[in-house]
Length: 85
Image 1 (cartoon, rainbow, N blue to C red):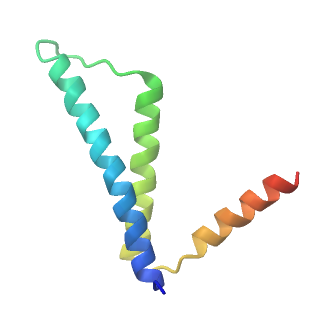
Image 2 (image 1 turned 120 degrees about the vertical axis):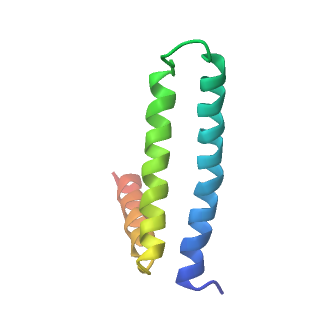
Image 3 (image 1 turned 120 degrees about the horizontal axis):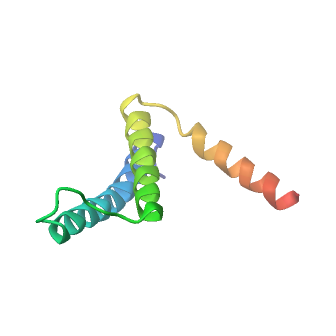
């Protein structure tokens, strides 16, 4: 059985992998435009990167505060409500 603290750490570790992918994407975009002062990135990719970073910050904050895993229960109940409708 996994205690609540380690479950939060596992969630952060999963998100960390995605954050590393976003960092690699940003490095790639910077390399493409080395000679330019401006960097261009697709709006959808940028929006997805911002959302991922926000989720990561939320998860890290949750773990650092030692919060319970109540948030997962709320997300699960919302998903159940959507299925009923």
